[in-house]
Image (cartoon, rainbow over all chains, first blue to last red; front, side):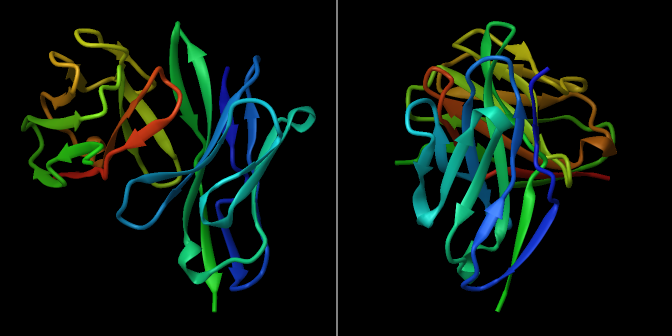
Length: 115
Length: 111
């Protein structure tokens, strides 16, 4: 069955430090992969997506993610975190299930930024 | 440039009451989805639609019904609300199922 695992429920980093959020997926075919960010009380905003091609994808707000097929991973990175990056981050895999396409989400990682 | 609009944004219901959440999109998307978000559980798919007049069950459909009478609207109904349905509900739409656009959510409390 298709699934997405985000092993870290919370992560705390200092402002200016680098960030990596982990995401592992389970899907039999070539996956479509996404990272979304949710600020408190807000909806979900797409940070970046991977469909095919270059395995290192660039997104908005200085984020990037790398698709590693051998590790079934799609980790999100940012070289220098800003206080405004504090939010919850969701990894998702696009999967064809019952002849329909759906996004399957991980449980999220809450990022706290230390001043 | 509205995108996906959800109404209402907040609602408090008593157990057993009914209500309908409305999702409207102006992007001519075929696919529409209803998710619920609960702490520590991410987003779980309730129902979805791949086109006008079609609906299908997602991961957690029990206690909910949906209708897609018009392409731009996707309604989520609770016939008899229960405290377990206290959650934040998100609607999303997509073009051919690839990139999702989310609404800003409806926070529902059932007391």
